[in-house]
Image 1 (tube, rainbow, N blue to C red):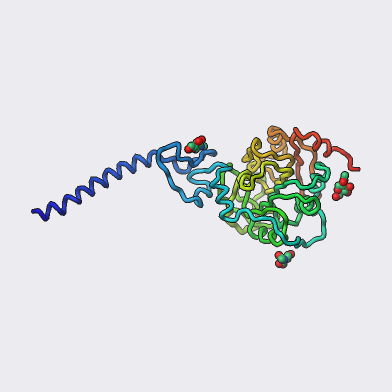
Image 2 (image 1 turned 90 degrees about the vertical axis):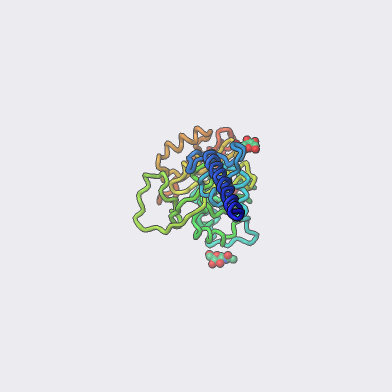
Length: 317
Ligand SMILES: *[C@@H]1O[C@H](CO)[C@@H](O)[C@H](O)[C@H]1NC(C)=O
Ligand SMILES: *[C@@H]1O[C@H](CO)[C@@H](O)[C@H](O)[C@H]1NC(C)=O
Ligand SMILES: *[C@@H]1O[C@H](CO)[C@@H](O)[C@H](O)[C@H]1NC(C)=O
């Protein structure tokens, strides 16, 4: 008899503890934020409930189940920890062409607007191989600008790294949502792009594309990690996701003086792009076109920068 009580008592106790625990867990589970929430600006923050939830940072970087703020320090830390920002090369340039400005005209347009200003800061996305039709190589090499090159395709990025550019480089894609997420990227040298973006007018691919999963960061996350709050020139040509990328930018937190934006692949059309940018406070000071469709860019300048707008219109001496 004594022996029996000593064996069943702990079992009852265990069962009671388990029941209480399970009930408690259900209660906790109902406090947790819903999975697959589409809210754009939800922050992972313990203060909204008394329960700390723990989700691996790698999972959060895919955009689910919670989204971190663009300038959340955990995003910056992830960017640095995982090598998503590589410093400028200290070696000499390793370029294949002697072309001072391989751009289709954007480089000279920006030089003119800034009246040969030295030491500016640019962002170029896609960075491609860092040389072919680069809009920023001239500014960097001839005028000593610093900057950030963002290239999603790992193959292009490997080529870019060989050029020994004097700018930060990131093998990532610019987010089309205001938080880090991942996309399937179709690799195709200069026309690689995010699969299934909103650019519905872009014809379906005929050939089979190589695809790779790529980590995206909002442009503001990369700039926050670098503590950059002013960008003199932002070159945006991402084969269709331009509008979505622009929509992520908190223009009140980062001052972008000028932009060139490729409009040919913008699904909603160039007039919608113009309208959106006008609403953000920009004016179009020119267009860069190329007969073989290698460029179809609007050049935007912030409407507060009267000298830059005037310089864009001036004849060069
Ligand atoms: C996160 O929590 C802190 C206090 O712990 C609070 O000051 C802050 O406003 C919260 N942020 C958000 C986005 O809820
Ligand atoms: C600016 O640079 C261009 C070419 O790099 C040169 O032709 C021009 O004379 C320069 N202008 C001034 C005002 O220095
Ligand atoms: C320079 O570029 C070529 C390709 O254009 C490459 O084969 C070579 O390895 C590069 N050199 C360095 C030091 O990266």
